[in-house]
Image (cartoon, rainbow over all chains, first blue to last red; front, side):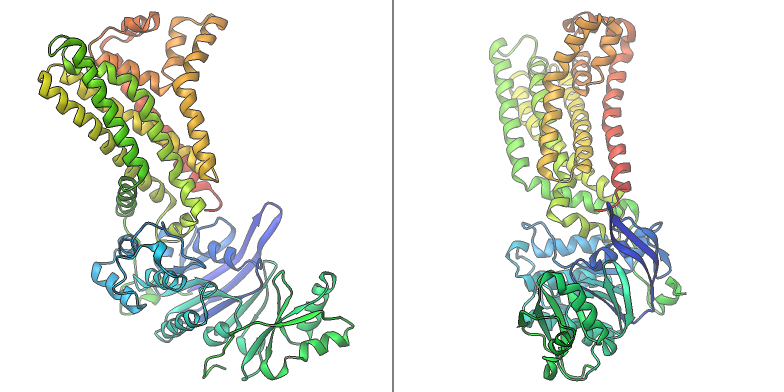
Length: 293
Length: 293
């Protein structure tokens, strides 16, 4: 479904995405995992043809650069945060996107109903909650029943309940045979949805792996944030990765996903390497749904 | 390799809309947004009130006879149009892409199965239609007043004023859209648009006068430089269509009448058309070449 070859994007001297290549078969779910600034969003924009880049990308065999319109017709895109004119009513907003995708009114209504937004057509976008906006974005993405759904941190602005709803919807889409490509830094989403995980670090694919390899446990995962001195963060991340932990740096410490009954393991690993941990913080509501690997 | 046919299976895959269909979808949305906006209402109201005021002043100075209401009012409206219409069109154009970019909505629009050219042309067509509607309201109300008081004498020149004004609006809108494509922020785009308006309305005349004095320009050179300003081309075009002598514009007008004769009106209209098309074409090319949203 997706074939990316040597995708590279630079902003001035900074390479946001470096030589990323991967293929994704139809019906699979791939997670782009990485810290903030790892290049997940830029990679998605390059794959959609919204951002000019080096390398090539094909969606469903259609070249994104030369036939961008046709390629994007195969994609439903859900951004991190839905950007609409605030004054627009929900009904007219989705009708506009329905018009762009040659979708009739009945399909628009069905799409709204599928995400629980039926009856809200008269509401203005500015009056929608974050969760409703995200569901609207999902409804728009599903309008033409595209085979590929691309999501850029779809739950980052939602509370736990909203996240659960979105993840459940995505799970249903996956079961219905849709291809999913999504960026996330939440282990629970990745474990629940992804068949494969591309770990991005500084714009490059550092590992092409699975959720089971990243978090080799069937037990619930807890994400902890370790606060260290700035100078030791990079070294600590390396040490933890060598010890098999899933780590990312997000500018406010070191986030590590660990089994709930082994929360002290990374601290012990760091202590063995003479790296001092100043503080530890449990990141809340990272629940693993039942039946996940 | 995954191809569209392989993906299709038993159902048809979503297709992008035709070029014209997608462009018209954007045009309709832009038109709806524009006519519902405050700037549109404000400009329409201001233009209508001033046009009617000019009509009444023209009538009061000649009674209900004389150089007939329409002809006199056309001359009166000329200066009003030269001030207000470029301001309306330039600021409307300046906001159309830069505003979307600043709100973050442009990226989401470009992630749909549309091309950048469709987005830009759709916005242009929608805004142009809204501007023409706004002008038609002002000219229409003014025409009703004149027809009621004086009949239809001089209506031809008035109709040509409306046509030339629509051309002027489109030329200024093109320049505004070009500014918008080149600007990252809508405030910058609006500032540049205001500077261009000031230059075209006031500074270019002063510059031309100074240039004529300093460089001892010949009359044909002055004429050539004058019609580089679309406002001057508009002014001469309207005066020619009023069957008035261009002698009122001094030696340059006399030269233009003698040199181009009956073809002058067409030449001036063509100049306006070039002003409408060239900046728009430049905007389309530059927008399509941009590396990011």
